[in-house]
Length: 250
Ligand SMILES: NC(=O)c1ccc[n+]([C@@H]2O[C@H](COP(=O)([O-])OP(=O)(O)OC[C@H]3O[C@@H](n4cnc5c(N)ncnc54)[C@H](O)[C@@H]3O)[C@@H](O)[C@H]2O)c1
Image (cartoon, rainbow, N blue to C red; front, top):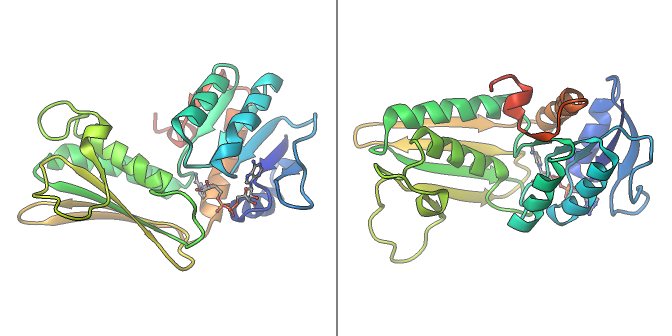
């Protein structure tokens, strides 16, 4: 299968190019805004993997939709408007979109959802993430996915009553914030050094705490999952899929 990597000059792009060697995915276009890279992909491309920058995603995925080729999005931090372009493209082509392509984090999502159901709103949920100093968006797409898994585990309620993400989620804290309301799900982003990606979901009860942690040691964990996702997506009906579909969890 002939493929294009969008964001080819970046940390993830380089890892994807390296890992694709020796697979049946042949990188024929290396797309990036950086000097010396292709500005777009060639006509023979059959699928695209995008780990670039959110602002460029709408134009690239719209082109893929016009061509009818599969698209895997790793890029995070999309605005609501940019996400609409992704959703529109997914009516025409198979799109896999995940904030994290590693096997471990996708297992973590299952565990967090289960823990939130079992422990209930009496256990306060705090999500922390740490990434290298170059990461541009916050919180990470993975932290948001983990918070959403916890929210789903609580049957989409903050405490007992149904409530939206916007009503339950808090991003960091500062100042005279008062007591922590029951059912809040808080998300905190740390930045520094060369950390590839650490995530912890803490369930803090009165008598005990449960912490579920994932630490990525190498970007290859994400790159391998994204390559697998593109092979899986090729030839599927149009629609938006996640890594959970690729791994057979749903
Ligand atoms: N989903 C996952 O599993 C996962 C894992 C790691 C990183 N990410 C995300 O992937 C993205 C890239 O991460 P990175 O660490 O490789 O970043 P990076 O900054 O090292 O690389 C991004 C590359 O995209 C290029 N770029 C910017 N705008 C572009 C455009 N319009 N068209 C083509 N190329 C463009 C940049 O020049 C750069 O080379 C980020 O959004 C990051 O959060 C996702």
